[in-house]
Image: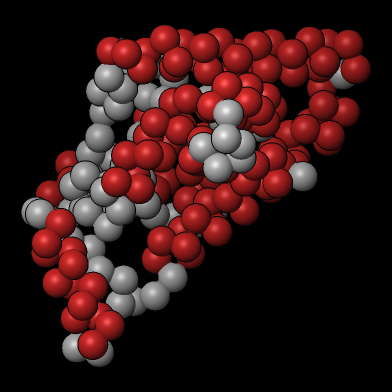
Length: 198
């Protein structure tokens, strides 16, 4: 169920759920807030990802890191990022801290992910996210922690693992997928070479 909510919210973020921008925003917030994704923060960074897909430096997510960035990582970060099962739980960490080598957070309206005119949208999404956290804490106080963990926590973790796995395979599913630096023209040349079988 969480996965279905993410996919519908994803479509809202792309504006393909409805012709109405307002309806996309309202439904996207409701769906993504329920699964603890800050809708506008994610929507904006996801747009950046699509605009720069396959670009090692500019892609927002799911890109290989350079040797230079890898060498600068703390030993703890290297262990967590490249040891199973942590990569399958990376999505919440990515939302808070982004990918290695990048600064900012999907929750912080002052993050360099966002333009000044997008900051209000990020504040709205972050407020919705914290409201959902408060609701979960309230439910744990009323019904107990164990029932909330069983009915919400476990499905949430399964959803995050599924989301990470599907997204990783979608972006790295074939060894011939090209990665590029520099201008878009280089990417087009790489794609032509892949399709020609070189």
